[in-house]
Length: 83
Image (cartoon, rainbow, N blue to C red; front, side):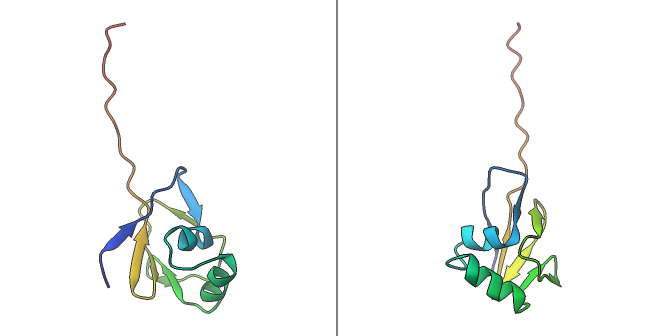
């Protein structure tokens, strides 16, 4: 398996089918449904058959030898403006 590819999103989680599309591993939702229904996708090492499964930061999705995940949350220090 190759390195984990990070797929940036705006929210804290994303549905599995949407993640596969966003990562470019499938062309559309119908294909995502087919590969998920055929037990071709793993989440954290376990076969996942629910297209609507919420994937959160820190979880690992595997499909056809590739691994995907969401980038870790980054905390940015807030500057003290002296207000």
